[in-house]
Length: 221
Image 1 (cartoon, rainbow, N blue to C red):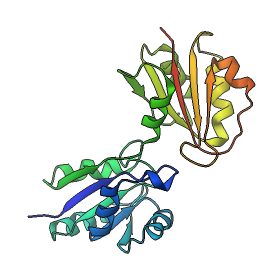
Image 2 (cartoon, rainbow, N blue to C red; image 1 turned 45 degrees about the horizontal axis):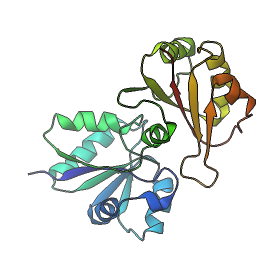
Image 3 (spheres, helix red, strand yellow; image 1 turned 120 degrees about the vertical axis):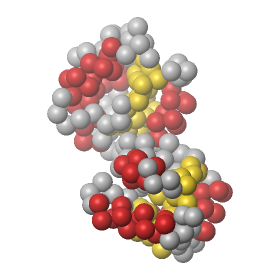
């Protein structure tokens, strides 16, 4: 019998968004696997959680996966968290989960905050079907935005602060003029701002190049 790996969603900004179940899980597991132990420690300190942490991120090697699997086989319970939001969604945690599914490990979701779902929920756009594309790539961005423009469904993707203006310029060159956007900046944080309008209207708003962004696009039918 092996231990359990809990996939625990943590706040994307406002610490009050953590669930009671997430707090209890983080308190009761043997170890917490963190994308950045320093970032997670701030959360743990706030909720007075004393559980030991282990680093697991996109650069972790096979030896770390072996160690994690060994802990689970030794009947240790682990929690996987990302810096913010739901692990495994546009996050390196999905690689670990994929590798452990073949080993008959008990993997349990502890759902909660997700930036893309939060953005979709306030967009007002059709969400019965949507396409989530993660972050635009550093190369091949033209093909990425072509997918956005040609999608018959609402599209959501992440963008970094230093690329948001470039992103909007690229969308301006390919989106239909009637397409509507909802650009969410710093969701659930102090400076949360939501911008709505056509691509031309959004560009005129002179959005600050600070914070984290979710861009939602619809109307390309």
